[in-house]
Amino acid sequence: MAARSPLRGGKQDRASVRSTVETWLFIAVAVIFGALFIYVAAARSTSWAHVQPAGQTHLHPLQPQARRAIRNLAPTGTFGTIYHGELSSQFSALTDAPQLDALIATLKQMEGAGIGTVIYSTTWEWAEPKEGNIRYRYLDMLMDAACKNTSLKVNFAVDLVTAPTWIWKRYPDAVSYDADGRKYGRLSWFHKLGNAAAGEFLTHVTTHLANGYQGCIVAVQPVYNNAYQTRFTQEYDAFQDYSPYALLEYRNWLQRKGMPLELFNVRWGTSFRRWADVEPPKLHSGDFLGVDFSARYWDWLRFREELGSQVYINACMAVAATGLQCFHRFSEFFSVVDAIYGASMFKHIAASPATSFLVMDTNFITPYGTHIKPSKLRLYVSAARSYGKPVHFEAAVERVLSYSLIGRSFQSALMGGAESVGVSHWMTRMSPNDSLVKAYNNAVPTCMATELVGVFIHLDSCSAFHGLQWGWARTDPLHGFIEDLAEDLTARCETDVAVYVELGRFLADVNSFSRVVFVEPLLLYDTADFASYMAAKAALMHVPHEVLHLPANVTSGPQLVVLQDVLPRASPASAAGLASTSGLVTDTS
Image (cartoon, rainbow, N blue to C red):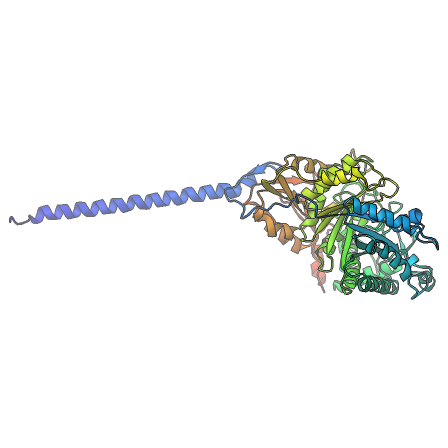
C-alpha cells in the first residue's frame, strides 16, 4: 500500500474545514435574515394601528383565543307587569270591593298566552298607611290570585320613595330637591332616618312574601324612582338631589378623600372658605352645549354615582337577606341625558353580588319622538350581559302599539343575550292574545352566529353632556351615533355583538373577539382609569380593530382628558398639578 502523501492529505483537510466553515456561515446568515424578517413583520403588525387613521379596520396575525356566541336562540321565559296604578284602575284593588275575579281571569289569560311570570307593584304610601300597620291582607290577595289560581311565578316591585303621610309628619325635611330648589313629594335618598324606615318596611314585606309564598314568589325590586327605573328622578330638566341632606353627604364624601379645601378650590376654580359653604354646580339639561371637562362637574357626578348606587345595593342586600332574589329595571342609556339620570350607577348596581338579575326596559321613543330602532336596543341589552347576570328585556307599550316593532325588539334583545322578554303598561293597550304570542314566537333568531364583535363604549363619557343639545343639528348626538353604529354592526344576521361599558371588563375578554370596535372615551376620572385605558389600547394591537370617536365639539381641543387624582393630605406644592379645572390633558392621537 502506497504511503499517503503528507502534502495531498493536508490539502484535503483544509478543504474540508473550509467547506464546514462556509456551511455554518450560510446557516448563520440565514438565521439572521430570518430573525430580521420576523422582527420586521412583527413590528409592522403591531405598529399598523399607529399609521392607520381612526375609523379604519386594523388587521393583525394574532387570532383571538376563543370565540363565544352570546345570542339566545329562544326565550327561557316571558313576563307581564301589572303596576300599582293599573291594579287600582282596572281591578279596583285598592277599594273595599276589589274585582278579584277579573284579576284572576286576566292572570289566567296571561298564562294561556305563554306568559310565565307576573310582576306586581305597590307603594310604601299605600302598603303602610300607619307606622307598623302593613296591609298584608292586600299583598296576600294579589299573591293568592296568582299563586293559587295559576302556575305563574310572581315578582314584586316595591316603591320606596312614595312615602306615607306619617313619614312626612315625622321628617318634613326628608324630601328631595332639584337644582332650582323645588321640593318633590318623594323621599330623598340621602335622608338617613327616612331611608332607614323605608328599609325596615322593605324587610317586613319581603320577609312576609318569602315565608308565605315559597315556590311562587321569586324576586323583589326596590324602587327609588318615580317611573320604576333605577336612576335619579328628573323633572323640569333639573338635576336632583340638592336637598340639605344630599349636600351634607356630598361634603362628607369630599372630606373623606383627605384633600384640603384650598386644593379643591384650585381644582374647581372656586373660593369656598369653609366646608359648610361648599356646593355642587347647579345643573340643568341643555344648559351647556358640548362636553363638560370641568373637575367640579365630574366630582359631583361621581358622588351621585357612588352614593346613589349604594342606596340600591343596600336595598338589594336587605332583600337577599330574606332569601329572595333582587332585581332592577334600567331604561336605555347611551344618550346625552345620561348625566341627569345618573346612568353611570348602572356599573356598580349590575356588578353587585346583591343584584340577582337585570331587566332592561324601553318605551320605544327616541329624543326626537320617533320609534327607536331595535338594533340600538340590542347594544344596550348586550352591555348589561357583560356583567354576567341574567338579563331580561321589557317592552313598555304605553306609547307604542306595534306588534311588529315589539317582535323585532324581542328578537334584538335575544340576539343581545336576553334570556326572557316581557311587556308592561299593556293593560289598557293590548291583551295577551294571539298577536302577542306571535310577537314572542317571532323573536327567535333566524341564524347562528359565526363571528363575535367586541364593542367598547365608555358609559361614563356619555355623561360629559349635561343634556339635550338644543343648539346642535342633532339634539341627542350620542343617540344618533350609537344607533348608526348599531345598524352597521347588526347588518349581518351571523354577527354577535358583545358590548362593554367599563375598560376593565372589556380588557378581560378582549382576546375572545373576532374583531373589536373601540369607541374612544372623552374623559377618564383618575390615573387608575388611565392605566386601564393604556392596557386596553395595548391589547388592541393583537386583535383586528376599528377606532371610533364620540361626537363632541372638541375637534380643535383635547381628544382625551384625564382628571388629576384627588390626593389625600396634598401639600401646597402639589397645587400646581391642580391648576387646571380640566385636570391633566392627554392627547392620544
